Image (cartoon, rainbow, N blue to C red):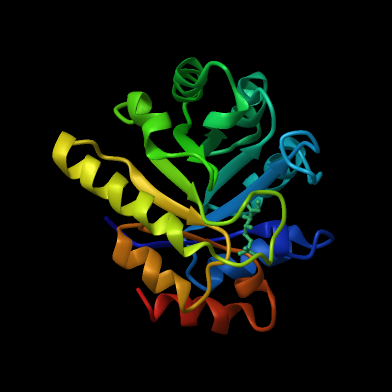
Length: 216
Ligand SMILES: O=C(CO)[C@H](O)[C@H](O)COP(=O)(O)O
């Protein structure tokens, strides 16, 4: 599967999202990762579908919305209307993961299921035939700038093996603590989409994206 870089605007300048997204697009990123947090599912608050609607006319990049909110199914239509291309929802955040993923697909978006560091692949086995992507959190969600948890690579390997054995076609994304070293571990384990926030936006964005790309 194609390797893709997904800078997270959680670490961008909140007063200049449009400028920063244009910059990552020019630097060759494939996705814009948009972290939506509700202060309940995680201890942080960010923004809602208004930011997606504002970015839609600014970029043709895939808008990769990561919902760190409880009962994410409530917001599916709203984000689809705002122009999101894909929506990732946590298995830990809803009682109705299968129905919620179907709802995302029916709204015309790519559907992705997310697992926290404490959640095993077993918890999502029944929805793997349905999803376009699996997001394996490599930190506990809520904040940028945390250290990568290497033990999560076993789950990435397991997901890549299951895909091969069962003939599934989901992509595998990793999120949290990705830099020019950890990206290699994630790639070797079988991930192909790499979310990076602080590594991309601290310092020179173009150089940082090139450093990540050179390891893929
Ligand atoms: O989902 C997230 C936090 O919950 C962020 O996308 C993630 O942490 C990226 O930040 P960094 O690359 O700085 O670790």
